[in-house]
Image 1: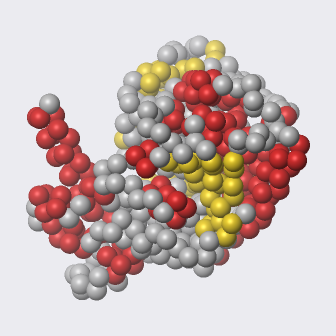
Image 2 (image 1 turned 90 degrees about the horizontal axis):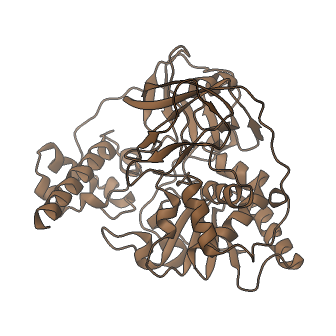
Length: 459
């Protein structure tokens, strides 16, 4: 296990002292199976599926219920066994999305599979079988935008390194940490499958150095795998410790920190011979290929201003309101509820009292965070340059902010707004409390839209 003491990506911040993660780090994963689930046909933005079932249909856990209808979509499966009550549009984070509502009618039984308790032999599993499993199992990135996993691994570009992202740099969230501690064997077996599927020579499981217990646990499993003969001579898997620094878990930042490679502007990790997958995705790969169970559940951290912060293993489509109630409810009257973490997650409710629905868990829902409301007003920029110093993408956010407000999109493009990763560092550091992240992200989306339109005209 290697320890790297020196950060090697530019910018970044240290937003907390670690007390945020301590709220739920020691909270063991609790399974929760609700009476009904509401499975969205669009699990990530632009990832729309066509629903295949109708009200009254009986469905089995793991049954295909949605086929991809867009590039960003992955197959959708029933997360519980029961009856389809409705196929209707539901409000979810400000949008109406067609959804399948299923009433659960059978208790879930967890299989006692070998891959969950020991390193297993994967020699007879071909790369083609792995890629088919990733595609048919509906796997998506479980730590970010929810990009379909199989599309990463079916690249025609040569891949020599696989990075498994266990950094979990976002404050408050601990779902990945608990997965590494409690599901270590399934995770390691999944990493080995993804390594074989990628065609890479080596896999790095990347953790921040605030997770020494998880790192030691995974290292011991790898050692056991080598001693038992389950690990082939050609399977090179390493646990890599990195400094605790946000956003260490960003794809580009992780590649810079581990491999000293820089993804070109407008490019993808595959352009520099790398694939990056989350630890949750690796665990799900083991479930679908070794356990024949598609992606129908995930771990969600419920934390912040709730009575009992914790980590819950839930089926896709679980109500966020139910999970907050399961955690004892909110403890502050003036609050904000965030889907995900505080740096990148959207605010879904203010002064929430537990009455109306918040949202429904999707494949990439990592957490539900309740924070005390802290009202503030934007002030004029003081040109301190703080946002420029901390931007991990090397941008000058305050200049992009001015250009966007002036609707000067040509200047936004010249300032490389297209490369914003929406990490939130600029807004966090800004003494004037300017909404730099929001407007820089909007500038990014506008610039990318203009670039796409130019490409269409040239074609």
